[in-house]
Image (cartoon, rainbow, N blue to C red; front, side, top):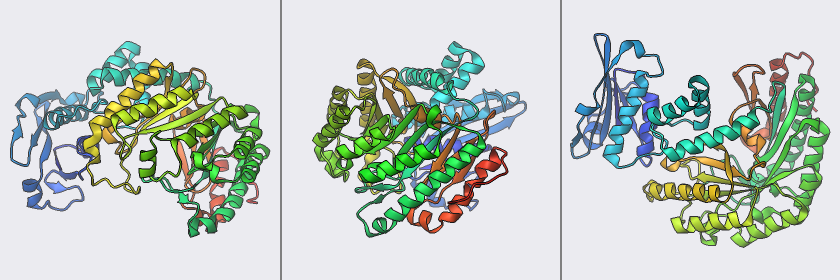
Length: 510
């Protein structure tokens, strides 16, 4: 697929929108007659591939915007009805030329492909954040109408974004300028799922076995050091999240040490939520769950992804749906009443009926939280995308629609939402919960309400300006072996937290 952009600087956003319609193809971008990298285009590109062209042209005090699609056979979708004259004075307004370019591109590609994305021209990660801003600027009703009509968002997606926005606002309002949340990374799993793109290692590989024990000891050191920095910075921990990977690859004794280190290193009196992502049921035991419970964890995740044993096997998960039910029942017996369960729409081998069955079975268990993810195309995953995955997009959209309807009907509410790059069908990931069980960490992290202090390989500290919107990032080394080898350098990076909060004294690294 070729995107031709003439007379404007909107190629980046237009390319992202084009990719929503052609997810199985690389989109080649030609800007004012040259490839995006500045080289002259090869003539065969235009002859052998379908193309869509977006052109802006200044005519006196107006800008003419047009878009046209040309198929491989040379058929052209008429651009005559897509022409617009826009006053140049509107170039930088909300009714901008960029918006008109995206609208026309969307209309042309809908006609050309027969696909009508529910999120319209929106390609950003957090549509609910945009809706909140529009309602603040324009008033609630006008903001909602603008969201629907200018961005071509469907009624269903608008309702979803609005419901998420309402819930998010109530949680965001509890944050304060001196608040932070803690993230701890355990980048190990019992095996690697085919769809996974996270920085995680199968714990039984030689490399992981060698890195595992020193990684854990170094992680405890970083947590202690980060706790000292938090104290000296005068910030308060509002939530904590142990994620991965699969944190329950740790033994019960290691979990106990990890959680004790957190409690000893941080003032827990302000902490409103402590999540441990137990994750895969083949790693969950009663002793590990007890260690979590005794360690002040009040929220856990037990993630089936699907309740089909056949699909579980296809994606490389070494557990059954029955084992997931057993783990859930064990957790409730121990006393956990705040449990999240994840499902993924679009896993290889799944069907619409199969996914509906998974949704129904998880709802029947009655967890406090259910998170529904749309499968995303990640080049770093092991999943084979050559089999026409994205031609399955309409079924995946139906899966997500079914889950949303079923969860609404069962009394769950959507409380946070984000979209991944190259999500199939440009669909969303949504956290649903029973009222009162919203995950505060998920909202604080996703909406960037306050600082996130992150420990472990691949973790990213995000320092939020206390009374502003600027974010400063501190990146940890990506892989466990790298984290171990360069640990002292890793620790020294955390000094930037004190600099950020205007403190001069530095704690020791050990």
